[in-house]
Image (cartoon, rainbow, N blue to C red; front, side, top):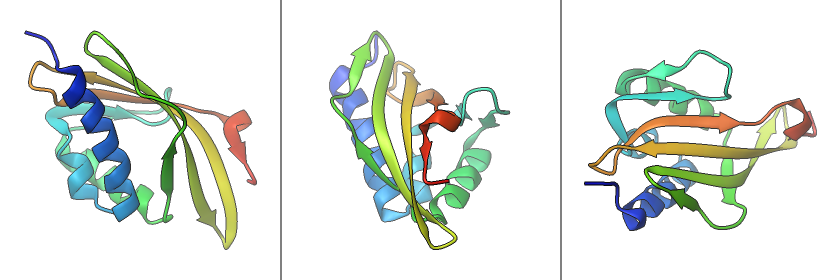
Length: 125
């Protein structure tokens, strides 16, 4: 059995929608209980629902809005998607260009999320 591409794509769209609503519980629901979130790549991973929920709750305090930049790319049990993050920091508009990857289990839950961005992708900071 493998992940279902339609459900994988739906999970990405649910992730973006949950961010727009500022709903860390809805984001956490996409992840398997033992999932990891490495955001950005190279930083310590957040592991498990409690750590993942706390990370997203903190991230959402910025009022960040995500906008997909092109289609979700799916290969095997992985999805990759480019998006921009619009947020306000100290009353000033900022943008970050990001590519996230999701790895799915056979139940179409995300078991690993990795976010790719760095200083050259952060605008207005």
